[in-house]
Image (cartoon, rainbow, N blue to C red):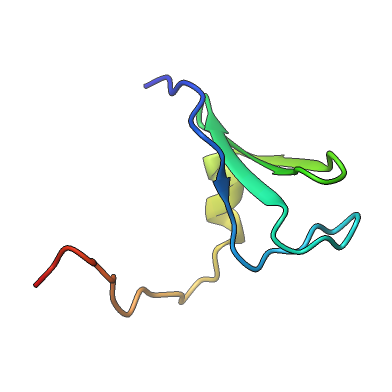
Length: 71
């Protein structure tokens, strides 16, 4: 399934590793490749789903998911 370019999603509290600017990192997904981009200095970092899965801790589990629409 080929994905087209989505809107930028900003990562709250994230700091750019290059310029150390807070709240300047945006995440985009294009053709199943996640790209982080700093809107302040232009720093970019990309990863495929396989790279993201291998970076997940072995015993990491989700405790719960917050759904604001749930009553």
